[in-house]
Image (cartoon, rainbow, N blue to C red; front, side):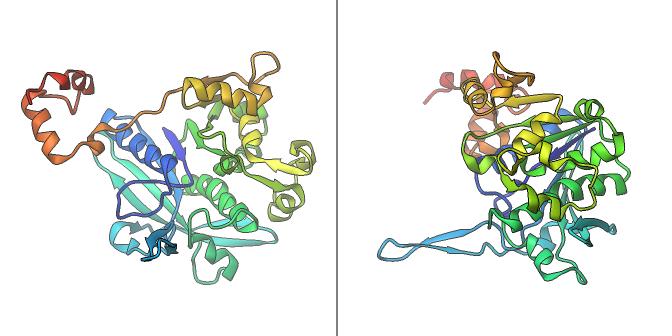
Length: 314
């Protein structure tokens, strides 16, 4: 069983919990898992105000609005509650479920800390995606990584592989380390995919801020994990993952430049690449689908047949 952790997720156009490529790719991956019969479960966060809606004024000025949506019509709340530590307090976390149905039903769990009784600043964590890069973002990522791990335990899942997409969920490794007591045992269970060479994909937080929020994990030597007084979550994910990959051949070499520990000359990290793909059924217009059904029967189950699309008469 694979546990697929991702900060943003594009399941449907009407579920605005994604920003761009990472979320769309994650959605396509999960739909592919379902069709291929790969046992997996996904952990993400619920964003009740979505990402953003953009409008242009008559004068060409861009305005941003909250992407409000009726999540209660799209998702089902589960009768389960966990606790996640933030500083000196434990806060309650609820969960909402979405199911992708195919050969393998893929459960997607949206974590929700907007629970009565929680501190106001914790309840705000489920407002918006990518709203802040300070303490708000740090707490969101604690919610994703630690909350996701605890939810899977509460639901009784036996996870063989924890797949971290970008560094946002890297704090799940501290929960694994507490349970397994060994770096090598954690590495046997973790996979890390780095998706982007831009700073937004590699979160850094002051070590004092991390220590303050994760007081419960006093066994962690945060100073040893830090660089220049900051915890780089991508470096944390790299260190605790047995397998690491970039998302294209070119991106592999770019990533080796960002992470010298993964380079051929310097590294202990054996980074590979897996080229991004798409779930083809989500990217075909209905009228084009009719053409494919007529001239390329079976294309939806065997997309290699699409290589013959140029043979369809005009």
